[in-house]
Image (cartoon, rainbow, N blue to C red; front, side):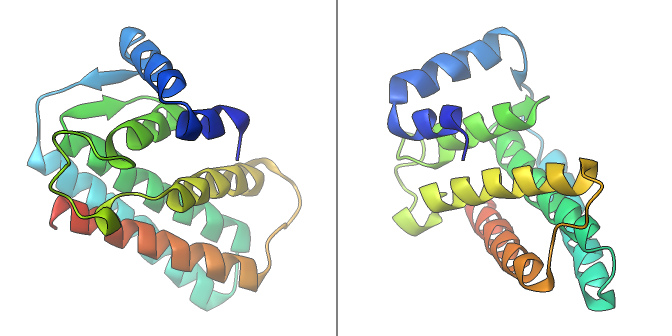
Length: 169
């Protein structure tokens, strides 16, 4: 996991500074709440997951399975932002929002049970999958074996299912 994200998990002040910077630069923006947008992101997440599953069953294009899994997780994450009335124009900013709003108890989330919060392990998975997606998208090598992809797929499904529970979908 990159150092910046580790700092966000350990240092609330650093997280708050970065979050404010993303808001100030309008990378994360307040938008009107939209259940349609939440549902659209979940549908796109499911679509990307289904695409990855299809490729996995064909045992072809392993690198694109990783890309599809990443975007399934990313769209599930954007659904969480939309659920709170926000949008993001940046993958790292989206992760900052998740850590800020979903990985700790806040006043508005105090009702949630601990197991419905996104854990540090799941944040680490998100960043690992992001790194693997970049490798799959931009590397000329076929860098993934079936076991690695299977593990990423299981974690992606778990993450997306947790998002659906949080959103009560």
